[in-house]
Length: 455
Image (spheres, rainbow, N blue to C red):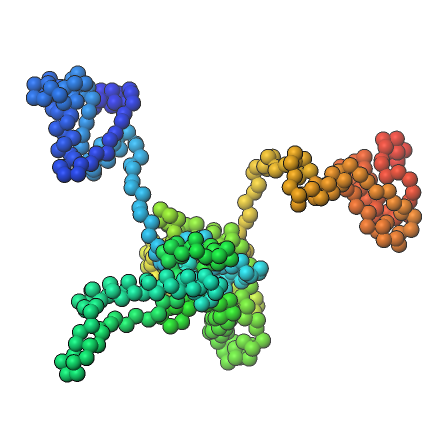
C-alpha cells in the first residue's frame, strides 16, 4: 500500500468522468484499460491502455472503479474535493434570499421604513415575492403588455387542465336541445406577473417599470392571492399586530387596566435594527447553492426574535426588568438539539436582550489607501464637472482675508479654514483663531512666541 501511495503521489494524477450514450460506461472503460496485469493485458488485448503504458501490477498507470460511490471512497485517500453538478435554478417562493428580503424591508420609495414591523409581517403573512401587479405596479403602456402576456398564460393553463381532466376542447352537442355548449375549465383571472413572466416581457417594459421590478418585493393578499399589499395596508396591519400582542402581555401584567393603557401607547414598534443586525440574525441558517433560505427557517428565527423584542418593549412600558419575562418554550422538556434546530417547533433563542443591545460593531483592521482620484486632478472633464473642478482648485490655492475687529460682522462669524490644517492645539496653525474674536495680528504660532509663552 505504501508503495502504491508513493508511486501515485510522485507525479500528476488525472481523473476522468466518463459517460456513454448506449452502453454502460463502466464496462466500456474496463474494456478500454484492459487487465490489471500489463503482461496479461498484452496477451489478451495488445491495444489496451495498460498493455501499452503499464510496466507492472503496481505501475499499471490506470485505475477504474465500479460505481461512483467506490470511486469517491478510493479518491478520499488523497483528499481530493468531490465534484458536484451545479443544481438547476428554479424559482420557488418558499426559498427567500436576503436580497429579496431587503427589497421588502427597505423599499426605494420609503426613506425611513420600519424594517422590524415589515420583518414581523414577512414572518407571519409571508413570504414576500418578486411578483408585480399589472394594475398597481406598472404604467399604462406596460400594463397592457403584461395583461396580454397573462392572458396567454391563462389560456395555456386552461388547455393543460382540460388535458389532465380528459375534457375535449371542441364543444360537445347536448342530447335534449341539439345545441352545442362548450366544456370549460374555470380559472380565476391572473393579475400578477411572476418571475418567469417578468423575464419574458422585461425588454418591453419602460425604464421606470424595469426599476420597479428590480427594486421592489411585495406581499401577496386579496382574493386568490392576486393583490399586492400597499405601504398603507402594511402599516395598518403592523399596528394591529402590535396592539393585539401588547394587549395580551398587558392583561397578564396589569389585568383590566390594560384596556386603558393600550389607548395611550404608541403602537409603532421601535426600529433599532440595521441591515447588519438582520444579517447577523440569519448567519447560522443553512442556504442552498444560490444563497436562498428556507422560509420556514426564517419564520422561526424572526418569531423568536420578535418575542424577545416585545419583552424588551414591555419592560420599558411597565418598568419591569427584562430578565423577569419567562420563555414559554422552556416549559416543555426537549433535547437541546431540538431547541437549536430551526425546523423544530421547539426552536428558541437563548438570549434575553434584543440584538441592538448586544451587537458590537466590527473593529476596523485595515484602512484602504487606494482612494479614488480627486475630480480636480482628472485630465479630461465632462461639461458638468468643469465648474465643480474649478471650485475645488480655488479652494486649494486661494484664501480670504477678513477683519475680525467687530465680532458682530457676518463675515467674521463665519470664517472657514479651507486648507486641512489639523496639527491640533500645539501645531503651527492656531485652529481657534476664528473663535477668539477681537485680537489682531498673525495667527501663526512661531517657535519664538512659544518660547516666550513658556518663559
